[in-house]
Image (cartoon, rainbow, N blue to C red; front, top):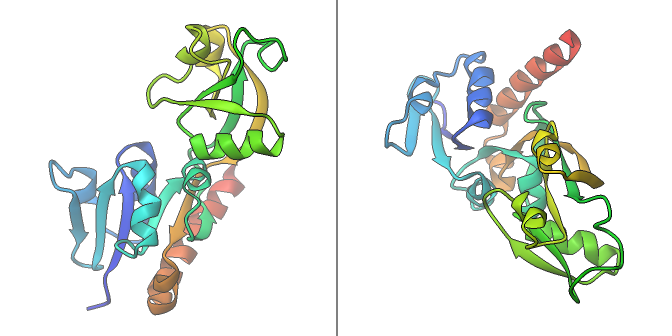
Length: 218
């Protein structure tokens, strides 16, 4: 039997779209599609194992070699800053990472001493405003970040934006774009790429063919 490969995936849309691609390579994803309470699933035929984790934990599992491969949003990679190989842009889950707020939010006149930023990406926020030489107070939120400016908790937010409909519904607008190329990425553990090179190359080439075919259809 071929050596085992382990994927770290987060439940939800990115995982479902990843399963679609992997099934086209002949990998049985029926178990991870319907895991019940199980967190570790396997396709015995191809000897590929799936572990289902929180999105923010995918880079951690891959970095430590518990998983050989993972699929995760570029926003999560930017926040985590883990030493991983980013192998392929899978082309789905596209969005932008933006600063948003009321139109006059970036101005110098604020009602308090410190410029406040609500975000689920504190590391990215620190780097972004540090590069501008601007001191900020980070208010870390994990729910509806848009509430920050609406209720006066923060001056702006830093968050991913897809259609922008939630921002508009709350009177907010995109003020700056921090990263416009956010999408699902295939990442790999550095040691695994050496020790399981042939199996991982098979995965990369199979996924890349589908990504290129999809791009050609647009």
